[in-house]
Amino acid sequence: MTTTAILGGFLLAIGSFMQTMTHASGAFEVTITPAPADDHSDGGALGRMTVDKVYHGDLEGRAVAQMLTGMSPTEKTSGVYVAVERVTATLNGRKGAFILHHTGIMDRGAQNLKITVVPDSGTEQLTGITGTMMIDIRDGKHFYTFDYALPVK
Image (tube, rainbow, N blue to C red):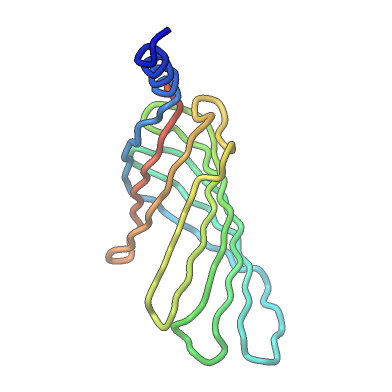
């Protein structure tokens, strides 16, 4: 077998596993319910909350999340949140569920948000999903853009 034939077969095999990124977007409503506050004598604020979402657009469905927050006791524009969100929805015609992991950091007002699909969390027609989501809040309304990939069938 020639090197060209081996390389061609290898590339063909890899190509069958390649995923193409797809873009989804839309709006969502969010309801945040704080848990009772902890007592912190140092002024630092730690919080816990449950989150309920309804997604519209390319992603149609519902989500529930648990969120933890921490705010600076001295600088009100610095803090952090982490959340784990389970999305049950139809994504561009494919039904299933997956989990998103959120990490948000605010450093004196400068925001850095990362939302990633948890590996191997997809179910049903969303098995194998990977991707990242961005959130944009404009005029009090929430919007998402979701760049994702699914295995080629």
